[in-house]
Structure formats: structure tokens, C-alpha cells
Image 1 (cartoon, helix red, strand yellow):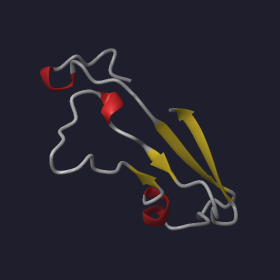
Image 2 (tube, one colour):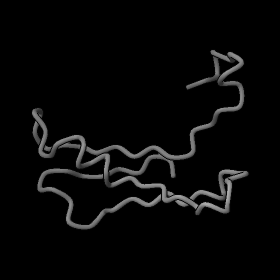
Image 3 (cartoon, rainbow, N blue to C red):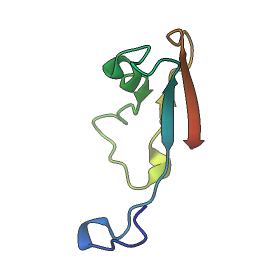
Length: 76
């Protein structure tokens, strides 16, 4: 998605995770804020600073999903 736009602020960006919540209803089956809260990246601690992507741990809560909502992990 960044192949055409190589601006200075995005020159080294890469997609590392893509999580799509699919709803059975066109109006949605769960509020967006509840679904976004399922994707969590915990802090490393006060004495650590991330230096590379591998320093992060992306956690996605998949249990007890709202009825009619399906999670698709397209990149991750």
C-alpha cells in the first residue's frame, strides 16, 4: 500500500499485521471499540525501549467473540 508514495515520513514503513473483523450484519454485530480493544501490544517495561519489531508482542483476544463476528488474520 506504500509502493507509490515514498514520502520521507513513510519511506521505511511495512505492514506487519492486518486483522479484519467481519460482521454477519451490514449494521454490525459488535461496537468497534470492543473489537479494537481485542488487539493489544503490551509495554516492554520502564527500563526497556523497543529497537526492532521483534521486540513487540502483538496479542489478539480471539476467545468469546461476539455472535456474528469473525476475525480474519490476513497478515500477522
